[in-house]
Amino acid sequence: MSYGATFPLWRQASGEVWRDYTRHAFVTELGDGTLPREAFLGYLVQDYLFLVHFARAWALAVTKADTIDEMRLCAATVHALIDEEMRLHVVTCAEAGIDEDMLARAEEKTANIAYTRYVLDAGHAGDFLDLLAALAPCVLGYGEIGARLLAEGRAAGTLDTNPYAAWITTYGGDEYQQVCTAVGNLIDTAVARRLGDAPDTTPRWTTLTQRFATATRLEVGFWDMGLTG
Ligand SMILES: Cc1ncc(C[n+]2csc(CCO)c2C)c(N)n1
Image 1 (cartoon, rainbow, N blue to C red):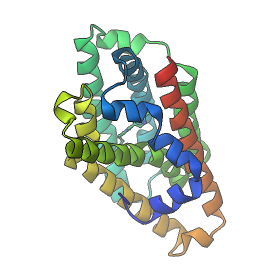
Image 2 (cartoon, rainbow, N blue to C red):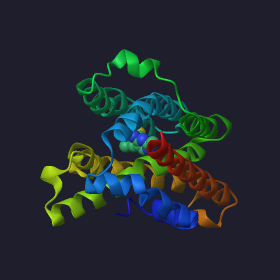
Image 3 (cartoon, helix red, strand yellow):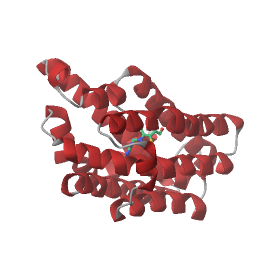
Image 4 (cartoon, rainbow, N blue to C red):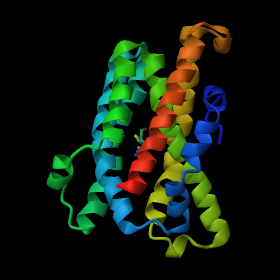
C-alpha cells in the first residue's frame, strides 16, 4: 500500500521503527486471534481517549489549513472520528460491561499522553505540514496493518473464527482504505503547495521526516502499553 508519493518516502526514512510498529507482537496476535481479550479491551479503553485527542488534532488542522479542500478533508475526519471510529470502541466496550461514561473517566496512561500531546504540539508549534507528518503514521499505518491482516486472514481462511475480525475488516476494508488514499493525496498536495515539486531537497524535509519517525516510535509505545497493561 503506497497511499501517494510522500508517505513511502517518510516511511522509508523512518527506518527500522516502521517495521517495529507494523509488525509488533500486538499486531501479530490480533491477526492470528491469540491476543488475550483483556489486553484488547485495555487497548480499546486507552484508544478511546486517544481518539478524543486525535479529533482535537484534526480540528487544529482545520485552523492550520490553507485551502477549502484541505479544510474539508480535515473537518470530515473530525466528524468521522467522533461519529464513526469511536462507535466501534463504545459498542465493543459496552458488550464487555464498560459504558461510555467509564471510558471518558478512565485514566490516561503515560504512553498515550506522550503520543497525543506530541501530535498536538507538532501542530501548535509548527504548520499544517508538521501536523500532517505527525498524524500520518497513525492513519496510514493502520491502513497498512489492516490491509495486510485482512489479506492474510482471507488467504488462511481464519477470519470467520478470529475474535478480532471486526477490527481487521474495519481497517482493511474498502471504506477505510479509501480514507487512506484520500489522506495520502492530501499530504502530497499540501507538500507540493508549500515545498514545491522537489520537497525532499528543501530544508523542511528533515524536520518532517523526524516528526513522522517520532510519531511512529510513539505508536510502538502504544502497542507495548497494549501488551503490558
Ligand atoms: C494508537 C492508534 N493509532 C492509530 C489509530 C488509527 N486511527 C486513529 S485516528 C484514525 C482516523 C483518522 O483519519 C485512525 C484510523 C488508532 N485508532 N489508535
